[in-house]
Length: 221
Image (cartoon, rainbow, N blue to C red; front, side, top):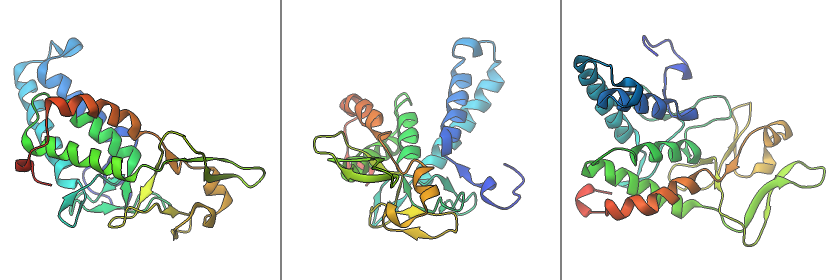
């Protein structure tokens, strides 16, 4: 939102695929796809410019840890581009669900340049590294949802991972950050999606995409 007003409403927002949806719209307008075939050339050219700026914003906000690209936060500061907080229990971190959506969008770009392809490869590598296996997040008796053993289950990912260590972290309404899900209030533990399998679909698509866009050292880490 412009002009800036203060608070998390100003942030670059990857939540709910807000950024990806806007860029997909610009992508459709830029090429005159389907119902946008009527759009005049001048508007298509402007849409192309704004699309490229949006893609560059994605590349510039990808979190880098010790020289290696990882994924994205839910929101990024509009001026510094650094990860920033959203609601009280949504802390600066590496966010799996939003990052999977960003990665899916990047894989729709025809003929991606080296830097864009490198961003996708880096995100995929992070997802493959951080998936939690043989566990499930579900209700246990009368104690609410917990992370419990489930041998042979499909991988799941923590909604938030600490930047630098990749370990799952959990927030509460009082802005405190915790190492385990059992440390936060029952209301937040049972009222928020702390674990999910959203990256699974992105990795499935990546399996085909990477064959057409192999990793190269020129793309950087």
